[in-house]
Image: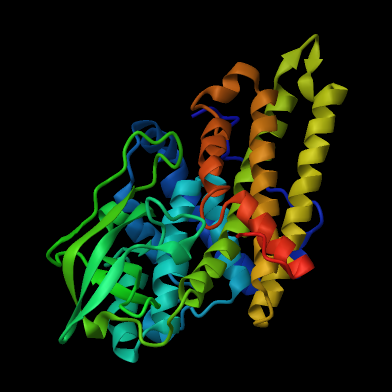
Length: 395
C-alpha cells in the first residue's frame, strides 16, 4: 500500500474534541485505532477487491470489546457509554464501512434488542456468546418489496402449539451468510409486529449470499428465507410488540452510523491533505494552489461540524434524551458530508484516486450504501420534516 494512504498518525481534531472526552473514551478509541492499524488496515483493500468477508477478524473485534460495548458487563458487554460506542464505530469506519457494518449489526441490531426486549433467559443464552464472537447475528427487517415502509412487511408467523411457523423473506441483510442467529421481525395473526430469534439449523431457514456488489465488498450481505420454519415460542422477544420494536433498534444503529461516517471522511481528508503536500505540479506542491486549499478547508470545516453534532448527540444519548429526529438529522448530515468529502478528495488525487493504493474510491462506494441503509437519505429528511411541522409526509 502507498505510504500516502490512510496509515498516518495525523488525526483530525481541529476543535480539540479530545478535551470533551474522558480518559476512558480516549483509551477505548486508541485501543480500537491500534487494532485496526495492525490487523485490518493492511488487508482491507485485498478483501474488498476480492469481494470477500474477512471472517477471521471477528475474534479481533470481540477481543477489543467492539461487540455490545454498551451492554452491561454481566451479559458479556463492555458496560460503556454511548460516546465510547460512537468512537469505536468512528475508528472502524475510518478503515472501512463494511467492517463497521458488521460491528453495528452485532451490537445495535442483535445484542441491543435481545437485551432491551428479550427475556432474562434469552439474555443469558445469547448475549455472552455474541459479545465473545462465538456467535454472529443479523437483523431481519427489510424485505424485497418493503424497505422504507417496514410496516408493510409480508413475513408472517402463525400459532402452532408450543411454537410458531415463520414464512417470508428478508433482503439486504448484513452478516446473514455467516450468522448463527437472526433477530427477525414478522407480523402475527393479529397483524402486530413481533421479534423472534431464529437459529441457524432450524429446518426451512436459509441465508443465500448476495454477490456482485460494488459497495461494502468486504462485508457479508445476503437474504433470509423462511419456509415453514418452526420457531419455539421461547424465542419470541416478550417485551415489545409493534413497529416501535425494530424502530428502536434502528435508532441505535443510526446513532453509530452518524459517528462512523466521520471516520470515513477523516480518512479521505487526511489522505488528500498528505497527497496535496507531496504531489508536485507546476513547480510546487498542489496544496499550494488556491483551489486545493479551498477543498481542504471546506472538508475540515464539515468534519468539525459533524464531530460536534456527534459529540452532542452522544451526551444526549447518555442522558436518555436523544430523539429519533435528532438521530436522523445526525445520520443524514454526517453521511452526506462523508460522501461529499470522499468524492472531492478522490478528485484531488486525480487518476491515482481510483486505485486501490488509496482509500477514497472504496470509501465512496461504501458510503453509497451507508447513505441508503438504516433509513434512506430522503426518509431521514422526512422524519425531520415531520418533527418540524407535525405533518407526516411518508404517505
